[in-house]
Amino acid sequence: MPKGRILVVDDDRVSRTICADILVEDGYEVETASTGSASLEMLRTRAFDLVVLDLVLPDLSGDEVLKKIRQINAFMSVIIITGHSSVASAIDCLKGGASDYLIKPLNPEEFRFYVNRTIEQKRLFEENTGLKRLIRLYEVSRLISSCLGYERFYEVVVDSLLQIVEGKIGLYIFSGGEQPGFRIMAFRGCDEETAASLANPLISYLKKSQALDMKPQVQTLDSEPLGLSSHEVGPVLLVPIKIKDAITGYVAIFKHPDTIYSDTNIENASFISDEASLSLENVQLYNQAKELTYIDDVTKLYNVRYMDIALDNEIKRAKRFTSQLSLLFMDIDYFKRINDTHGHKVGTRALFELGQLLKEKVREVDTVIRYGGDEFAVLLVETNSAGAMIIAERIRTAVERHIFLSEEGLSVRFTITIGIATYPEQAADKTELLTFADNAMYKGKRTTRNVVVLADNISPLGLNSNTRFQGRI
Image (cartoon, rainbow, N blue to C red; front, side, top):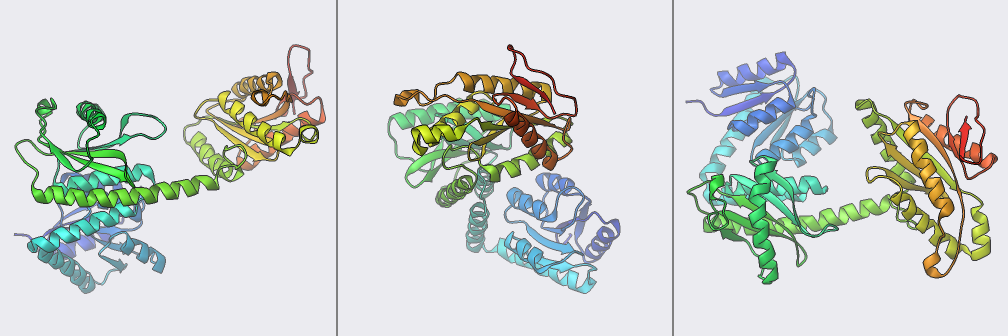
């Protein structure tokens, strides 16, 4: 009988073979993978006692694979090996849950020692039921508390509860937020259609519970009264997730048919509920702080810091999908007159109202930004220059016709000048996109103002009374 099952993940065939030969000679059953994706698929479908993981892989980085391994199995032992070592990477891996960290080329005796020690620790851990439970809860709570993004938080909480109570299917059902009602944020162990069919009766139950003002707590429900027995699932464990005393959602964990939830399962789930609720507060605070960094105080639009990041990401996306990205640069014509006539407070409120008007005139996928002062920008994804011209003219016309601050008893009117550049039609990179759109806008400012100008190398076209499109530059 083998001493244990080990997965070796390394894209270097020679290194992979050496590791496997040493381990087989030592009495272990060994499987190998050359990519991170392949290793994760193997871990989802097969049981291993240890993963030997190279940090440098062709598809995913080793630390990414390590994080995903912890989501699949928070208790999996992982030994990191790499030829590209640094103190920082070692610390990051150990913080991420790695058992040890070894440097290539491996010393066979040192490698044997660390593998045998890790397997022996795992065996002792499995034999001590009380210690096993405490360490499992500690590992899961550490995994949940490491999440700072909402999406990963939802997934990790479901993964953790599935592991800790040995469930079959898990759903994270979110409640509240800007959109009222319940919706599925994460699911495991089933496809999207099955997740929806399982969630619907649970949502009906939760709505009734809210109406009756029932105290939220970890509870078990029989699947048959809920009409879920046809899905071949057993009882469901409902775990509330809170921020302070307000319920933000529930995790529903379905057991296998003909199984039950023990008192220990419920106790463990209650512990995870408390830990997840505390961690969700941190996620919310982190994202609020992060959001404030990228939000303009006056208009509540994204600011120039965010624009820099968004442009990088959208150009990468346009390059990857061979699509186009247009940038509108706009400036209020004679904005100083508004401040001089009505005062800076009125000018500030007019900027806010303009920001809201701009958001109304573009799609949800587009991004409106206050660039600074009385300058604004709009990122139009998957939009060529012809489409951008149409949208820009729609914006220009809407601003020209709009009476600002009418609800406050004022009648403030102004116009804007808009410059356009498109990647990759006119601009080859982010710097050119910014420069060409800015230059196009300033060309309009130097001529008639209240115009749309497209950056190009074609000679200028004239204006007539029916169109406000300035020529190209």
